[in-house]
View 1 (spheres, helix red, strand yellow):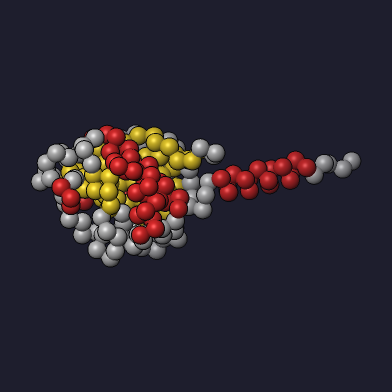
View 2: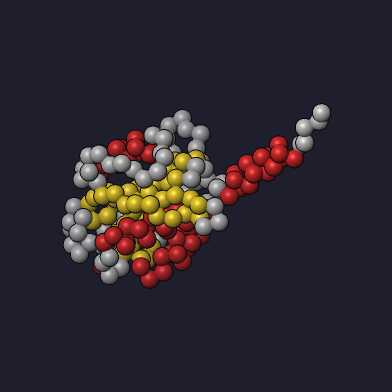
Length: 193
């Protein structure tokens, strides 16, 4: 007796569709890590969408009048334009270029949001953003905020949660990267907040 072939073809078609719906950025490290095989391109359209959603999440958490945002080094003007278009009047961008890591705090009299790390692991993403702890005081100490997102087929990336770290920024960035490199099964369960 011959087994019908269509279930196997259906499974193959389903897997191919699922792969295509997740986009091309299923494993991303920005900035790159030594010896990794992940994508490190900050200029893919899916990474621009992830950054814009994450920045919107951070802005929604603190709500000053307006922010200035800076994206990771190597980001081109087209990616800045995509993120700016998504954010609208909520924020303006610093000029793109090789010096984007050297953000001038308070450009245009507004607090700065600086995207420092982006990790994408399949259908989960986290974006680490450095911001002033008090957006109304440009001299306030900096703090790290991590935005966690999830991808849904046909709906795209959506917000899961925002975590504000209570460590110095450099230590918080290390802890966040370590947490992001663990297998993610949903929103972070924060210890050490």
